[in-house]
Image (cartoon, rainbow, N blue to C red; front, side, top):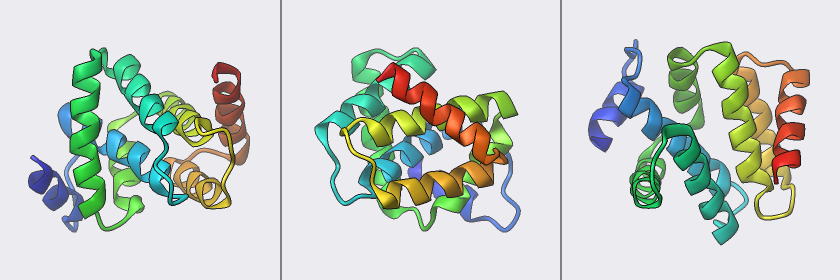
Length: 146
């Protein structure tokens, strides 16, 4: 499944993602964000699992399994842009705001804001077609939920 998704993401004109592939792409993007600061903290792993459980109505085992698959995909994936573009094509603008909130919740889970995470989140927001204001609102919502 990972190899198929990688081939799809790397295609010159990728097709829209299927639901299962979109789930995996989001999970991999969450993992990439958590690893951006060089520390893949337990709090971030737990937050990723909670996001996956809530977003996809998974139990703890299902979320952990999806995260483990996403960790493998993230390690092999060439760049963040392809994940983001694929997710943008698979979601509505409202869903993209929710995705940004989920991403911010992972970035904030370890209790610190890292400049590399901030840069990645700004890039993802831009690729999602979200304004700086929408990105800031997603961050504020994530901070309130933490």
